Length: 183
Image (cartoon, rainbow, N blue to C red; front, side, top):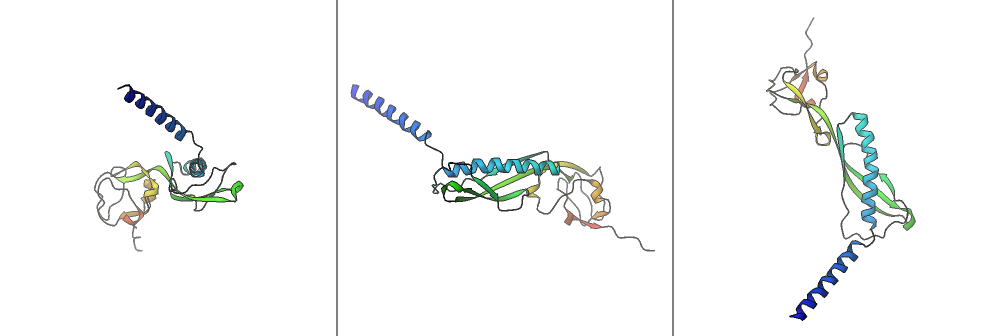
């Protein structure tokens, strides 16, 4: 029995040391690139959110595949935005100049949350949007590919093409301009 106890203690000590050694290993370029890209995009997304009057924003950077093993960059990695800055999917190139320009292409997502107009009641085809049949609700505009409205005044000269169900985000394709009355 003392042999089992001694073996268990030895196993426990070795397991603990291996766990500590695994957690203390140096950071990889992949994780360094994700951290640097997140900070870079947070700054840009804040500017974008402020310019659009967004209530809040979120930035998420996808980690590269684990099979990519690159050494840590001794300096600060350079980050280039490969897509126009906008809500939605972004591509970034992270470059380490000190390591023969080693680079990674990362993908990220910027979510901006804005109050947009939604229908609160049925709006029949040919009808107008009013304050009594609409309201504002926060939505991530990166998912609103068909557009959105932020003010009822944007709809003053438009009427619904067909019936709009309650709790739908109002999009430009749901409306047509009013017909001007003849002379």
